[in-house]
Amino acid sequence: VAFPFLAWLRRDIEVVRGVPFAREGGKTLCVDIFRPRTPGTLRPAVLQIHGGAWVLGFKQYQGIPLLTHLAAQGWVGFNVDYRLSPKATFPAHIIDVKRALAWIREHADEYGVDPDFIVVTGGSAGGHLAALLALTPGDPEYQPGFESADTSVRAAIVFYGVFDMTDRVPERSKQFMQVLERWVFKASREAAHGQLLRASPVERINPDAPTFLVIHGTRDTLT
View 1 (cartoon, rainbow, N blue to C red):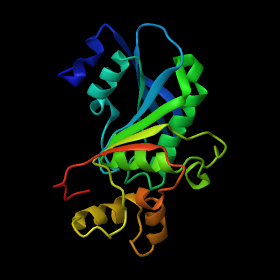
View 2: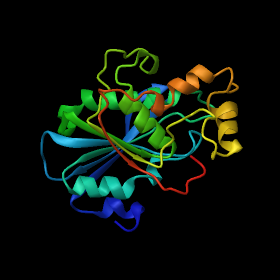
View 3: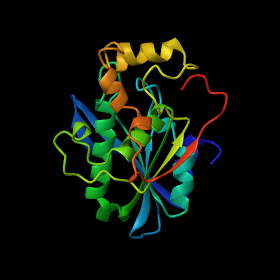
View 4: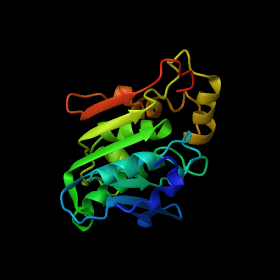
């Protein structure tokens, strides 16, 4: 679809908007669901996480061409809300997307999803959250109150993601760390050092990690 806002005009897919999956911090979090109109069961699913530096962005405007294309190919896509900073403090963002993943598994039968074939994707801050989600299944720090939920994924497709939340990347702008300190973690990099490390996907690589496809430009000086 050349124009994402026209995705709903396609006759081969159905878009269901604003399905609630959780209520956190006085905010109702929702998913938009993209699926084939033809009934089916055990379809692969994709969880799409929008970007926006953890402080802005809307699911309504990101990932639409991808979700539309995949729905036409027989996938079920879930475009997810999550709480944003500065109102929310990390790890609220990753907790919310993990809740969305747990909700998808709980409702797999309802939406014809194969609970054993769910992948996650996202760009920029959404890429960070997608990578972190894929590398931390069952991590109780990021699953308060739903520690036993299965938050594993089959694969992660990460577009220009943030893989290191610390100041170890020399090319990164000072403004990047200032956003993290002032708005996202709300602590100095020294005080939040341990939390920044745990939130860095590069620190979470492990032998049980799912398959990753990482797409990133060589001239990126922001992330």
